[in-house]
Length: 425
Ligand code: HOZ
Image 1 (cartoon, rainbow, N blue to C red):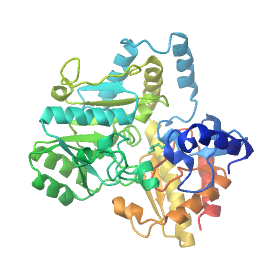
Image 2: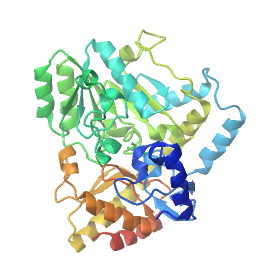
Image 3: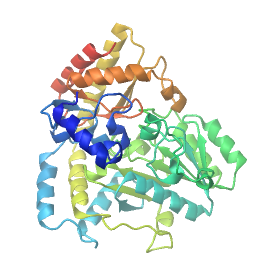
Image 4: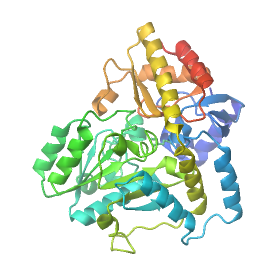
C-alpha cells in the first residue's frame, strides 16, 4: 500500500509528468490504489520510500534476471563510470557484447545495439520493408512490440491495460499497413497472406508473448509461421525482447527449434540499463547504414555503461546450472499457486514459460488475446492489492508477465505462497 511519502510524491508527479509516471502500467490504474515510489532494490527485494519491503516479481519488467544490484554487475559499472559514460564513438565493449549475443543466437549473423525494445522492433521492420520492397506487416492481436506507430494496432501490454489497443495519434494511413492475426491460429495468418500475397514484408511475433500475460505458442505454431512466411516471400521477425534470455540461454527460438530471419532483443542484454538490439541474416543486416542505404542511428547506442552491464549479466547467465535453478524456482512457485487455487476452488490458469509466468483468473487455458481479455480482471485487481499488502510486488496488470530472478530463494517462494494462500479468493 502506498504510504505517506509515495502519496505525496504522486501528488507532485502528476503536476509534472502525465499521469505521474514515465510508462503507463506502473501507475496501477488497472488494479486501483496508488503506485509505490521505489527508493532502492537488492536481490529479490524492492524497498519503497516509506520503508516498505516487497518480494519483487516485476524485476523492472524483465531485465533483472540476476536480481537487483548484483554485486558483480555493480562493481563493473562503478569502474566503467570512472572511465566515462558515453563517447559517441565505437568501443571494444560493443564488440564483446555483440560476440556474446551472436554466440547465444546462431540465427543472427550480425547485430546492432539501440536503446530500447521499441527502437529494435521499429528498425527491424524498416529493414524488412527495404529488403522485400513491400509495405504491409502482420502482427498478432495482444502482442506488444513497443510503441512505434505501426505497432500500436490491437497492441497488448499497457495499451490493453488502459483500454487503448489502437492508440489515437496513429495515422490511419499507417495503421492500414498493419494486419492483425490471431495468436496460435495459423489459418488467420494464411487468410491475410492469401488476401495480399505480394504486399506483406514481414510477420512480427513475440517468441513467447508476455504482453497479454504469458501465452506460450502451441505445438508447431512458430515452425508453421516461419514456413508460411517464407512461402509468401516475407520475413519472420521474432521479438525476443522479453523471452530472449528468460527461457534459456538462446531464447524461444532455441526452445522451439526455429531460425527466424531477424530477432529483436532487449531487457536482459542490458542488465538493467537501457539497451535493445536487432539482428539477423547478413544479407538483410548489411542493408543498414553505413553498410547500406537503410538509415538508423542513435547518440547513446552502444554506450559503455549499458554494454558493461549486459556483458557481465550474460557472462553470469552462461554459467552451468543457472537456468536449471532459475526455472526450478519458477516451477515450484507456479505449482504452489496452482495447488492453492485448486484446493480453494478458484478458477485460474498459471501459465509459465521459463522464468516468466502469469496467473490468469480464467476457467480455461489462455491461448490468445480474446482468451486473455475474458479473464476476471476485477478478481485480478483484488488479488494484486492483497498480495501487495502481504509484501509481494506483482505486475499491476493481468496483461503482463511476472519475472523470477536467480536471487529469489526457496524462502521467498514459501513467503510468496503464504501470501497467495491469504490473498486468493
Ligand atoms: N510496457 C512494459 C511492460 N510490458 C513496461 C511497463 C511500465 O514500465 O509501465
